[in-house]
Image 1: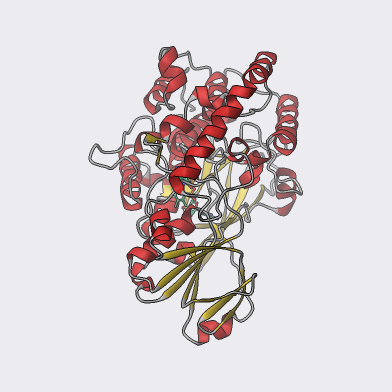
Image 2: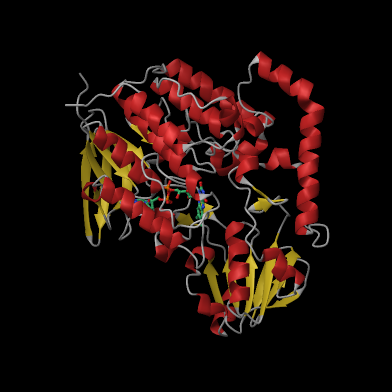
Length: 494
Ligand SMILES: Cc1cc2nc3c(=O)[nH]c(=O)nc-3n(C[C@H](O)[C@H](O)[C@H](O)COP(=O)(O)OP(=O)(O)OC[C@H]3O[C@@H](n4cnc5c(N)ncnc54)[C@H](O)[C@@H]3O)c2cc1C
């Protein structure tokens, strides 16, 4: 018999919804906390910039039991994803499980010495604590903005200039007739560049440090989902704990794999005109692929070509009224500076001693299956296994986590095995695949199948036959994973 537990879910984005559903479905008492006024996380409209759309195609950004609506485009817009998440919450009656406008400000062991955790909570001016048996952390990687300030910023603002974080750029009219400078080269930066151009900016400069590989939605006319999401392709990257057969295969196929990636680089250089813009990255593409590799915002290179936007290598050194002065000494006219400088990764509310246990001095997370740490019992992470299909990864790990908590995994790991695996994975990230260190190592891409295979095997779901061709040459299929979950042993806590 499995004992019913009280489980706190922190965050009501994609991952919090997946966690709430998985723990509720097994009969646990779920208390969800979301600090904003609505569910949806990064897709909540006041948190995203105009025109935001998914990088993943819609069939790869969905829960197993709810396809996105047929009339959605292949890459849905932010408000559509938000509406989809609401429909998922409606379908599973998840709203009742969350308390909105409730910020988790602290997380520490229970003072009564019992297993579980004490949460410090705040809602408006009311603060209180609650004790729970288990905590599922689903606060994502995009909750706390990186804030940069530059010399001269106060005078720049006093003279009428605007400086904001990319997530605060929610009003497109901000750009009209103004000189816009976007700092950064990520997907959010390029989205803002295109948005400012389309909204009548007087000029748009994109100031970035280093060129990175970017993947267009269509590579040489082929939808990128056919390139980046296949088991066959995945085998060309150096994954963790390779078997002897995988090492041998990699050695034999090395020249072919090398040629394949050089071919892909050549197509990208030609298609995007990277040389012309001095935007050819120095790192081979196969070493760079990870969660941070951006998809090309449609219209970006077109705006470079027609002169409405200018890419400039460097960074801001200081502001002057009406200008930004760059590291090269170049003065760029600037009325609006949008800083697309990302987010602070972390769990600021977790007590310091536990953060030290969880996070290495170099920022790498010590997590087994990107979900648990054996030295932090009664706690796990959902959505820390981010990927190019995060909704599916979050749902799968949520189902793994509830079984882990209940001791119901078919292959329940021992503490020793988790420690050994964590060490091996850290070694792999640090020595063999530095790209896997992105976001503290909390990214399962491009090894989607590898990671999902491990989850399915741990849960003990019987194999679902898709056929060799489909298995190797088509992207992960959400409905197939739904069938895996349905085929696993079902139970209910009471
Ligand atoms: C613009 C953009 C586009 C993206 N496109 C894709 C894509 O195409 N494909 C893909 O796979 N991924 C994409 N991602 C990544 C995206 O983050 C994930 O897909 C997914 O939405 C993450 O969900 P999450 O629930 O883990 O985190 P979030 O969506 O960040 O949700 C975390 C929630 O936790 C809440 N929270 C944080 N701290 C606290 C606290 N202390 N107390 C209470 N609540 C708290 C936050 O308010 C938030 O609602 C994109 C991200 C962005 C920003």
